[in-house]
Length: 154
Image 1 (cartoon, helix red, strand yellow):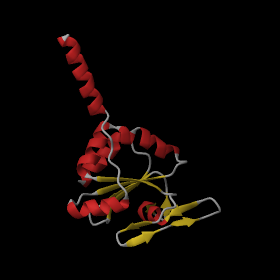
Image 2 (cartoon, rainbow, N blue to C red):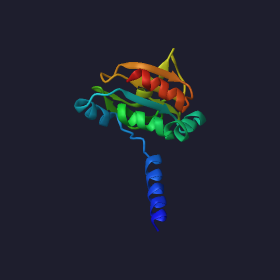
Image 3 (cartoon, rainbow, N blue to C red):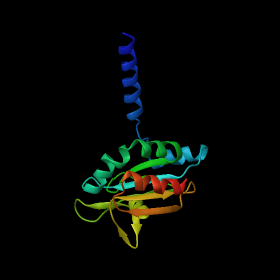
Image 4 (tube, rainbow, N blue to C red):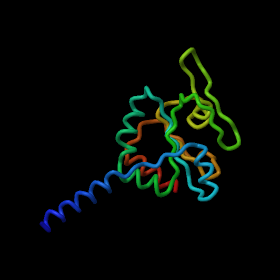
């Protein structure tokens, strides 16, 4: 009986520790949170059709070490570059800009993901608490790469 209780307790602890959730925020929430507790901001800029973005969502951002680092030391925003919702951030309203009848890009994605006059998905952008861009990376990043970047940007 005691052995069963110990095994059950172990399983509960293992399940709860491995199922840590990545805390995601909106740009508006981050502005509010930053007033009370300034931290760097990590913005994952992606689209629904990008296979490398999906790979990062399903592996990199499910990694327990990445989740812990982001939750403890950063504000994390997962941002769909094709969202049509107006977003007010840093005293500016950003809007979706159509590029065709069913295509387009959000102005905020353009502002945060443009490197050398081009946007590539996925892009990981790290912002200082004052919202200046510290780093931009246009590529698929595995957990080890993300952890390396985060360590340097704390």
